Length: 459
Image (cartoon, rainbow, N blue to C red):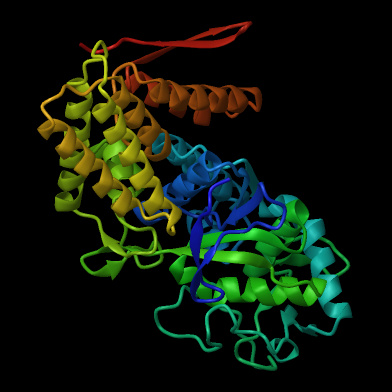
């Protein structure tokens, strides 16, 4: 295993990454609330965590990547009422679209997608423990977490008060709450809303409790890495910390917290709630998935970024430079020691940057320095250069090299994912993967023995 440093939001420091059960890594990233189409802000976060999972694995770690699907939520209920359809239909539709969008982006690294409604028993059990430990109280509309009972509240974000820029979409208002910041754990039944009959009374879970019940189910009360966008730190992630540590008596909930910067349009945060967003499907209708991935990965994951025509054109131009270099490689050339040394040094240089909090801009700069130096060397680029580029694309998934085995690995992963979806009779999602591969020039051949594929090599 390589030594990797990560910036830990919990401590505010960049620290050596030491998972509790190395080489195993238990990694959770907050998934979408499926009440509408996913936007390119989601694409940025999930592409960057897809990269992080890939890099950890390439460094010798064994990653289990868990993501929740928030399919029981106020936003879903509101949209369902607006469209006069059952909330579960809204959730199913937009979960399906989300999964298709992730496949279209090449983000296939998630191992487990866990839906909130499948974990009601675990949610109820966690709330019961909070009640027993004196961390929850009941009002006429449900159960609330008592912030006064958890003095460590605020240790992740460094604050306890709401601010205008916070991502607060679920307002738990009640005039009799003990503190304005107390949040709902269990919401009592209301007409026209989904509910479950439980020991807590008929109702449904609050937003925050869904995530901690899911992570406890799969990883226990404490695990290695929790990720999400920076706007979730407060109050959502702060609430997760309070709930899980109060219910279990174990800390920390997560050893490392990592947060991606926001995507902005015209200087404003991209958000479905405000209507200031571009869907992933709209973005992919105007550009290819590799260029979009490159645009995200050319920025440090913790940085905010603007996505516009200029950003995409720069990403497209950078991709072309690398791909044009690849097409000029002479695979029959016998590399000199200098050629082999240049490519080996470039790979070390790239990994040095990536070991330092996944510094993708620094790594890509090292790649371009290598291309420049190789072109100036006077010796043709040979097999060593091709091996380097294949290794790079294995991590980034942003380049199209004819005949590249790494391209083959990406296709293999997509074919396996499609086969799994077909077995689960999720044909629309499986068809989305097939359609993407068809656009890439890949032909699938289904047979009783499995799915085979072939791709014509462009001259």
